[in-house]
Image (cartoon, rainbow, N blue to C red; front, side, top):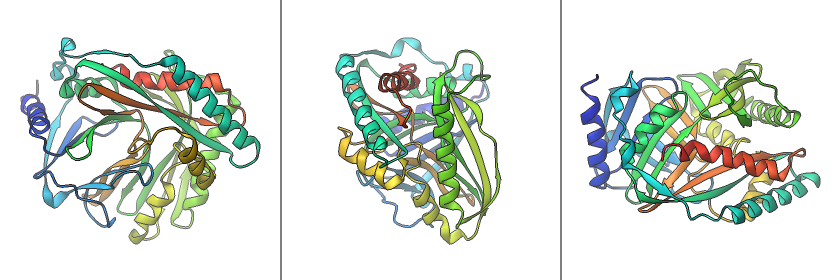
Length: 357
């Protein structure tokens, strides 16, 4: 057993107890878990994409763009090769739900219906519509929950982010926004969802194929003036927790490092969390979703750390409060969408977070 595992997670518990900012995260398919701690509870806002640190950025202008600057932070690492090292105590966490599922279902089906009408009037090709679901705690253990996420989702970006002025967020996202090592660029187009039933050898419906192609075409079109695109993979099926998605990888070379901010702003919010055309879809979301996404479907990750930028879309996530959690789920609406099916897709996605309680 790795002797560093115990003090590593004890340090996280102490930071949370002492209300000091931190983020702990593990990149997809890696063993190294990283911890960045900020030495004082100040909110540093991202103003310059030449800065270096861990960033946490909202979906829209509904929250501060936060950075834990490297020069104001301390870094720690722990390698976890055996998940048995985590010693998850199953008895430490219980939850109940007084959430009105019938009302949530009705509201989401009505929202999807509005979205379909918007699409049918040729105002958009795709809109990603979301909702929040509330879980009430009888007891909550942050470190225990994070350990479960590490164990359950080895191929996701698994994180726990805390700042006393903003709150506690946790997630296991399957979607990478950008991977930039010097000038070498990689991103992905991720769309389409179905339950994982024991195999990745599945057939995809036309709706999912169409949605995935929309996302790929949009990304390629928008970045081609900044990226020398070298390779676009064929769509393939990937597993993310209890779900499957269609994914296309896009590779290239960034023309100039000064274009990083412009590139990120071009990609965010992606068609996988907003829609197409982006401006039309965004306005529909802001006017019709009956809650504020804040940091859900924003992005987070390493900015200019060790000559690399690795950012991830904040999906399959939740915000934690004293006695409850808000779980955020959504799905892409296209012309062939069926409202009841879209609601059921959000139910499946909610299980990614519910399964760690």
